[in-house]
Length: 238
Length: 279
Image 1 (cartoon, each protein chain N blue to C red):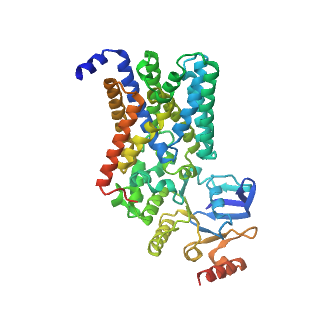
Image 2: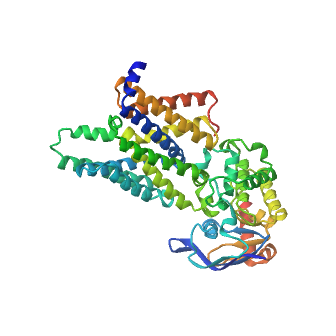
Image 3: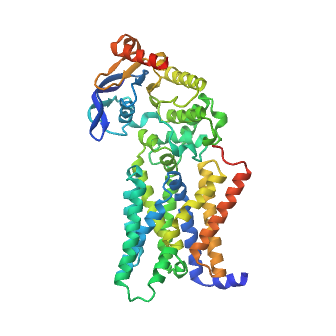
């Protein structure tokens, strides 16, 4: 079932477009990676999808199956969070807030949801620990659990493995894949890591000026733009 | 010493001072945790300077100050704190606050130059000196009502305030009305600052906002723990400060701030003994 459709969308800051002519359709259960070079507009596009800024032109349509407050989001960590006094539990359950309305406290069902995600992400034993004392990978799992409390359908991730070591990175990718396959949650991930994108994703959106690509991973490998970008990425690693 | 206290407690104004002191300290501590964590520690300072400007104008027209300072401060707070709060941040706060401080003093000098006690008035506004001991019953009732509203709002929206403080873009992206809660925070911050001016004066307000939060953050690792400990520390310091100032005739505001500073140092020592904060 279709979840999201972008038609000829331009995104940018203060009227100046960064990326133009973006079109895509996303089905429920897809795993989309948004790739592109620095400054190509990946993050701007993501913020536009999340309604943090308005598109300059074009249309972004979410299907009736998903409401604005049913999107989970894993942002990059901010400076404020580094020394924020909060327990793992306080952070995770705050993800349930978007469906609380004006109710001042969390319901039993919301607490159960938070507990379930903590267990699924192997974080239940750290529930009462201080968030700021955790390792980078553990903090990322906490924020992932919070994002999952906010959604049953769509999860948007902003470079989730930035700054993590290779082992933790692999764990996190495996975890996101499980969430996608077992829980049927659609994934949109902004990523620098083209290798992982090809390995885990079902669809690729490459943002590059006015020459964008959207399609399945297979189509991307065979496209001219894809092979060019892959070649470049390969050179970069060599 | 006890006799002396008993003697003082026979007077209404002393009881009023204690009630107002406790309520204001409590509100300032609650708000302080959020402001410190959002990196808005200096907002109290800035807003109180604007309140000073409004207060001088009120004095010139002989209006009860709070009817002018409250709206002016609320308006400034909403303008400064809203929209992510980065209205060229620091510079805007510094510019507005210094201007209203200077304009206020200028106005007072031009129009009230014959008043014998000009420096006394200004000193009272800036340092709060004795004003808390001259509170009237109506002041206390107004103050108590506003404080009750602030506390109620804070408890009712506690979880939302946590979310908006911890990660505003997450809250916004997942459908929480973050800008509404920011505006709400701005308004109650302004109310707390206007109330605090009675207690410690315009220049010392930051202490009331910052110290309890910093103490709590040294002692506890959960948000709730920090909030509750900050509130308790703040109330105790205010009580101690007021009682000491009654007994020894020291200025109320400075004494409360001194108590806050002392408790903060104790908290730092406790924290160091526990092995310091993990990064």
